[in-house]
Amino acid sequence: MPLSVQCPHCGRRFEAADTLAGQPVKCACGQVVQVGAASAPVDFFAEELGARDNPLLAETPAEWAKATGAPPEIAAQIEKRMAKKLTSNSSFMMAVTGGVIALMLIIGLLAFWLGSH
Ligand SMILES: [Zn+2]
Image 1 (cartoon, rainbow, N blue to C red):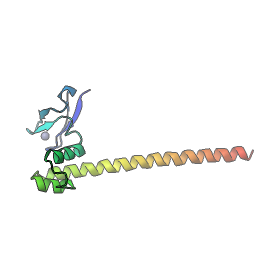
Image 2 (image 1 turned 180 degrees about the vertical axis):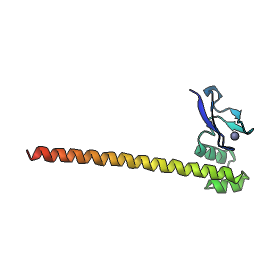
Image 3 (image 1 turned 90 degrees about the vertical axis):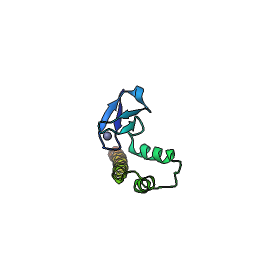
Image 4 (image 1 turned 45 degrees about the horizontal axis):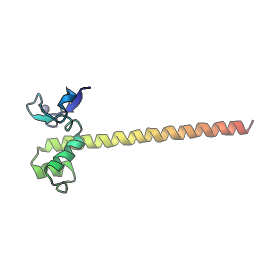
């Protein structure tokens, strides 16, 4: 299965063979992207922090960018995607909770109907 890679420099998405996992590949924009690492912006952020051996240096991508000298637009992109990820997680949870409540209502109505007959 090919790996989906997102370039943290320009945002392009492309696919790389899974044999290239962990390997640096060149994006169309000319920047070198780590396969596997860059496909998940949050992991990319964490990995960059870890790689610089200073996890306490920054708490947000913006601070990280300031501290490491990375272009602020990358930080903004990472931040946007982190926010999107959180939003999609919470809407998923809302859907699950809604489903459970609907199921309980159906069971309750069924029990009521059975009890009244
Ligand atoms: Zn690129």
